[in-house]
Length: 137
Image (cartoon, rainbow, N blue to C red; front, side, top):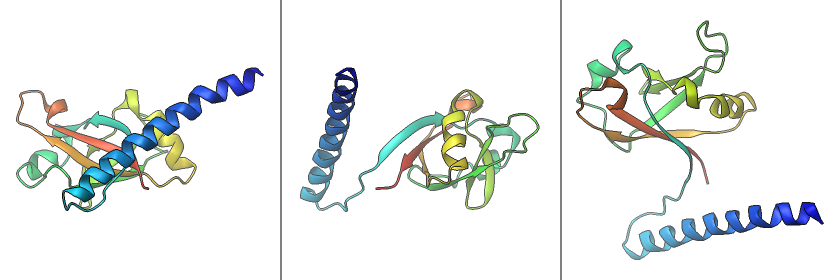
């Protein structure tokens, strides 16, 4: 009995997420936009912005641009390291405090997609680029 009670809220949450995704999909279709539903796994700021290629590419990176996630299990600083690339250029990393689940999924062979969600001018380099990691539908 306890297991059916445990599953019930989980099922309700899944149905709610699916309903919201369908609502947005229908809204996009009615506005003539292509269907682009996605389930966002996490949204994060780019870690290491000023140490890699991001400052040199600042004027070219745009919201919506696809990113590549590359697992670095042999990274000497963080065994869960996940590198973030834009057009083969190393921009930085998924923040250490947020990379364990992403690393685990990549290690299992899951397909995770990423895209730039926000580019903003700010004095804080760790807030200049934000990105989303999502599951393909």
